[in-house]
Length: 524
Image 1 (tube, rainbow, N blue to C red):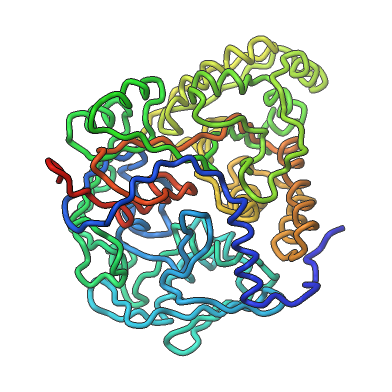
Image 2 (tube, rainbow, N blue to C red):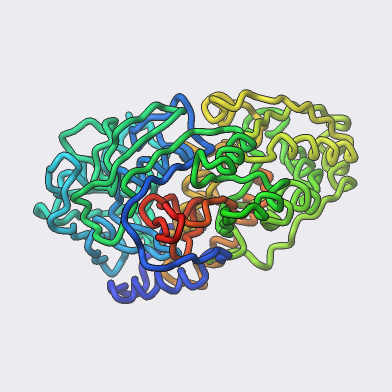
């Protein structure tokens, strides 16, 4: 039995950073345009965004999709650690960190002179309160499980904080880069939007619109180039596309792939594509019949034609999934794990073994899950019919899908941006106590491995542990992961940027901070 392993050798800060850089070298592959020239100040950036809902809140513990990620994390606030375009953890509000030899005690120094929008100076108490907002029994934060390893969090004077962990965690800085773990004033209301970010909130109507203006005292002299940023929540992909074509917005996310070739031919529009950790999934509740039967789960996994979905739904903009959430470009990807094929006969075999020939199931879907989710469900119904499975497609309302369907309905469609490390991804959605454990997966061996792998500093042992966890999820878990999808966005060709980050859409969720308008004839 594996337990949390004792740390076999000291890990100095230098060695830790070198290790992190090593991880980054194998981080998700990039296929992203670079349109760099000298950054310019000024202009209005208008974004048409899928993933905004009337239930949205500025409370960082309630962020769930793209609109609030781009507003709270990408404009109003900062985190202690930033993930750069190479997938590496870099100090943001922290000015650096030191770690004990067993990776259990982490001290983060804070940047001096950083001010919140209302003029208060950043101090350790703000960091402690912001992190604690996601901890404790009353927390509703989805990252609560990621912070359960914190035994104690305390200020170290006004300009430092110390995290003491129960178990060593070599990739702990990645945790502090999560979109939810932004820093707010310790004595304020977390729903006001006051932060240390490059833009200050002017207007916010959940599910409709937001408007921010540049923070004149922003502590990053080389970021937040726009004078203002307006975001419109536009759920329908055709409406988003039309808004870009007519000049109502300057950039959109989640493009319609069926017509992307036509959009790319239009003058004045550039297509941006990155390959990271985004994946599409079909979670089943493993504690609800018939999904509590492992043979039913395997039958459903063999009954989906992934190659057909890659061609039809993604138009080739992605890669095959293998029923676990680690992408091919990530460290610890289990390359020797055989790719699961489409095999209707094998699916029939598992149905017979379950005693459920002719099984009928309801599958909930909406294009709120991801572009093409309804078409995916329809195609899956055709694939599954060849295995003797009957799927009844239940088309759910887009607004409220994540609140009323995902985590609630026993079989539905879903999408994930993914996480920069295997440990974070498994802890977010597969650990038994994870708030976003959408398959209600309970596997003692898996949970022991997760705890051990996060503390393991021997790269070979760690790789073996993460490979076994991928095998467990693939063969025993309650999720079908047919595809990893490229992020495909479209923007006005006069927008400029450096190398795009791939761990979240629209440049790691920070396009408002990292992009700028070119000064060209006729430009903005």
